Length: 184
Image (cartoon, rainbow, N blue to C red; front, side):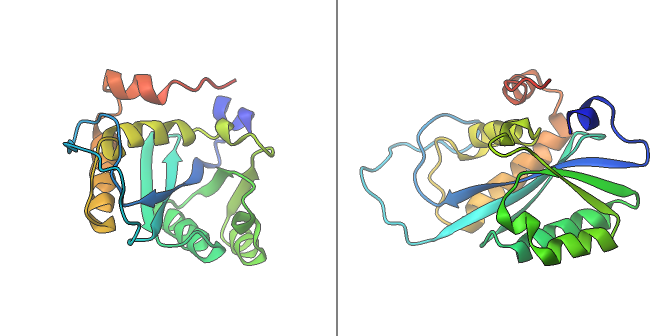
């Protein structure tokens, strides 16, 4: 896996994939560049449920892709992998953790049939996945110090951040946050 980072395959594209969440609609402490919450209430009602961000980083272009889903089952994993497959014609090497839905028989069979190779990280080593450090920046710029009223509003802020980040990934503050994790 580390070899794919140092020496990407010439016959395909290396993609880092992971889920981020659960995402809740609730007041968040902290600072960000967007909405500023004037005050964080002592209590709040969790009436909106949770969502999960399915996210991928294309190591060749340094572009992030993301979809927000209600659930985190093998069916949503497969949907996102099909989305990634639709973006690229070449073989896909997808680096991901050992979450059980990633290893579901239907997911593995589809990958075999569609020129997608899953590369599982060692247990308890999800920090080796390069998408992980991007979640810190996502939290800083889209989630901290917020008080979104709905999942739709939260999802819109996350999509807006991803679009902005893909255009501005060279910005020094973003690079400093994303590069806090060092890789071998």
